[in-house]
Image 1: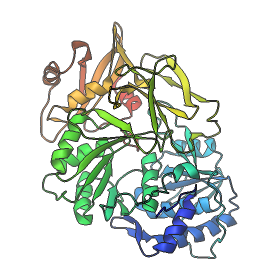
Image 2 (image 1 turned 135 degrees about the horizontal axis):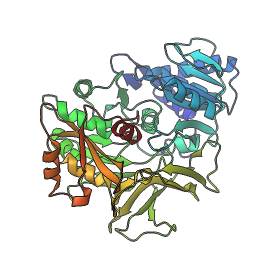
Image 3 (image 1 turned 135 degrees about the vertical axis):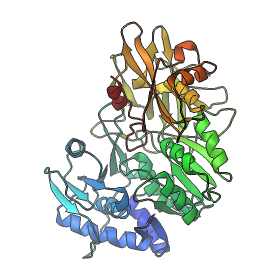
Image 4 (image 1 turned 180 degrees about the horizontal axis):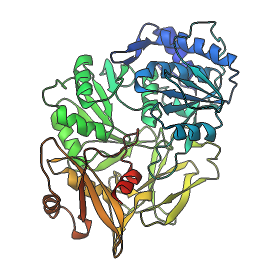
Length: 500
């Protein structure tokens, strides 16, 4: 049976499951509570009426500021805003006041719906969400071609930009014959609200077979215990979480996991290999996409023959690698990575997908590069890479993080993968720092596992058999933890600042 063959909207999807499965759990916050499809629908309709009294109109942007423990309230507010034909703008509750102000001013938000606690924002009305019993808003004013959400990019290389998506984009795939992840009763994740990965999990709760479970706060020990407690068949993490899980995996029952998916950043091959050993019954899959390109993505089941590949396109998406003049690169030739969405494309809020939207980024050498991000249905991923003869994509580096040291252009991702092969390394990042002679010198920042010891000379000696001399970092720093944004990516701008 086709569930939803025609373009639809998020509120209509919820209404459909509320009618067919009102008592089935959709979302669970471990130790906090749960939402059935019926209670989700009722609460969203009630909150929509409250927001209508705040004069929320179709097309209005409404900020949603919630923390991890408030996932249920966030899910209710997300649908409530959209029932009014308005646009949800998720923001994590750990966003600094300046970031919150930037996001809400940039999209000209009419108001803000939030969880508990005070909110430092004076740009419009603010409403504290809760159990909003009241007269329900009967009219669903959402349309498939109307905007559903605006997500702000992580800002690791430039100031966050708002990426707008229609309901038809967000609900793409809702017409599948079978509900995804049927091997699982529970799917566990710990993605932060405000990220693209979190929005995928919210849609998974509406479309998939298992109930979607998250934690009020992520720690690797809590996550490992939750896997066992819920007998989670499917688990989604970011690479940083995967590395932390490996440190506590021993002694926990992880045998229920059949699929472990990693998203938001490339999963280093050595880390994937350790996950295979730690999760004996699981298939390890690395997913690659971006906030701008979703739902286009590649997927790669861990293959020791291609440990660092992020895979090939899935679900009808397209992939190409081009040179500086926009011509397709031959297999093995390095160029700019582009993806094409099978759904109506996203765009920067206020921009256009038809004529192309440009963006500028500053590289480690201080130069500024510009290029179209959205172009004729294709999205530039901001990554440099190549496709092999079999169509598998390999990433080399970020556009905004090009490291040219002396006469050599080097891949920070490949260096990081080599560092991860050392058994004492729990986490690692490589950046370029200014140098009087070379222009840029390589600096590695590592996190050492447990009580292990690893000196800079020992690490460089380890890398001597794995990297060319110009690829071996001249500087090695040890930190307790790498700075990461809420999407799980290393914040290399912050890292560089701390090292200079």
